[in-house]
Image (tube, rainbow, N blue to C red; front, side, top):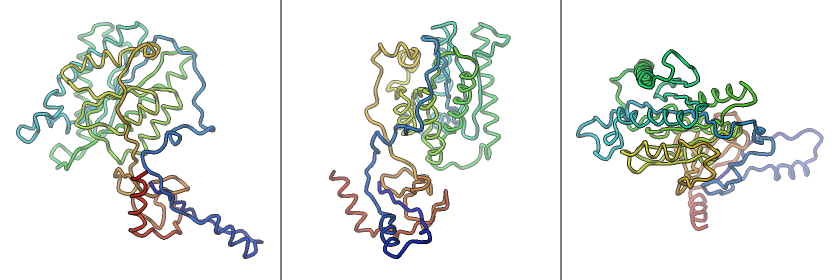
Length: 356
């Protein structure tokens, strides 16, 4: 990636022409080639953003916040008939069978420890909301069938509400539609912060993302803000991707926060994956050989067209990323006083970066 220092600076009074020229040379913006992915030092917190101080956790008591993807466009693809590939995950694992794996997993987490807590958040296309909280009590108590019926009823209400918030079921959708991952992550972090303030002794929190729909590049800034907030609060983000392709957002989230990223190969055994990898508490993970991702996609999305890019321009004031040269930053308003490089220099720079 080519970083472009583009802030416009003024020269104060009382400086002669020589000092003016020296300072101008010192502040002249330049393009510096920097390949992606970014080095690991870019992902670490600065000294002014150290992690939150250690809290008095209960060693084996867990708070698991599960983010459930209810994207109707993804799950409806399994019932698309001849227009859908038989290898599509939704064709192999419909939404009803998907819930048959998820709800027993929630019960298994509660059975591991009587003090464990489970929170279920639904992630839709237009909204997200709380579905179930095991700490909320309620009239069902320990009646498992009643609790399952309550979760299914609230999911149906949420899907209907999310559909009404959109443009209607008859709209024409081109390409994949992403879910509001940034919104559900924010809800999860807000709930965890409320638990943090409830007392000195509380369970160990972690977030589990059950993602099916593709990433939304327009959510890049919001998702990264949520990831770094989770890192600062020492909250791991686990990811279980059942979609067609890997999720770059969740790969970065699990890598930065110290969580586990998994894309199951056999969706028929999803419950076994969930129970073996994500049900154990954070203390027990030190004694387990958990799966590790083969690689992490650290590419960023540009702020102008919301596309994933390999090389672009970065504003030195607000760190906004652009795929093309602009005269003015659309985020902070800083003026760019350096002319864009010619095409030949850009191609040579790309070739040098690839050779390195």
